[in-house]
Length: 232
Image (cartoon, rainbow, N blue to C red; front, side, top):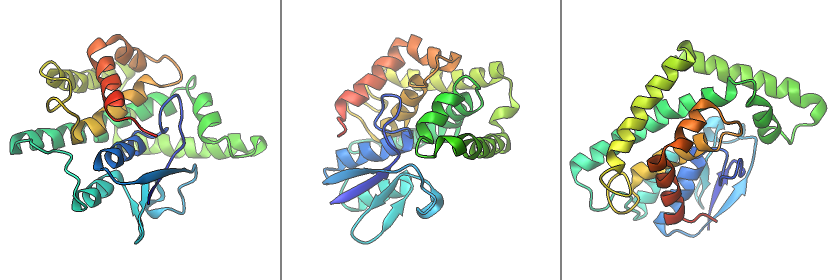
């Protein structure tokens, strides 16, 4: 049986990481027999991050690598899509994972109101006397990475404006069909929906979270994907 090494459930979601949710969605749709194994410290994992898929042969890091392996085993997440639709799907995935995701991270890790919830959820295994120091050091590293990425060099108004453009693009697809590429979930949904769901699950009602909550199209879409692919 395959084992998905994943961050634990958090804020009402299957995992605190949308990439772990993505991997779980793919496993569920692939028809493979699988189980989850939760962990909080991925430092001994390949790439030092999660998700990781344990097969009989090896530990396989990264949700995209997991996707390629599942497809090599017979899964087809984009069955019936044209080449143009597959190109659109790839663009949506990259927009969500390489831009929208980092806006979500900034909204959480840089916000002093959100941070205590993250600290006590993601670092609860660390003894309380050391938790503040260890988690604070990791927080500084994350914020430094966001600055190098460029996300935190914009004001909040500028960041929300950039997010708005992403959300407008996503919504344009959903006016046409219940899922991004048609009548059933495909690879684009497996990336986009978990990131939107994570934004909506932020433990403080930030302006970004409220933006998703107020949007009936996007909120219904998140729920539709979750209902279409029921995770264990």
